[in-house]
Length: 85
Image (cartoon, rainbow, N blue to C red; front, side, top):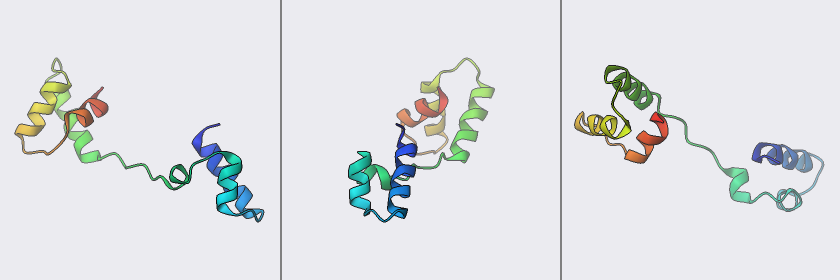
């Protein structure tokens, strides 16, 4: 089962009167996963990566990363790789 399916199952069990901790145990979902909030994608950074990739079509993520750093952006190369590739 996916995490979202398990979360829905926990919510249903809680609505039926089962405690949250017991519901999480029954569904085998860690409490940290239940409360996890994924980070939103930074649209401004994504647009900048797209703009650079369009301008320099043959450059890979490493050069895009260097151009972002040279322009004053504080960004990790792994994040550029994840968003670019």
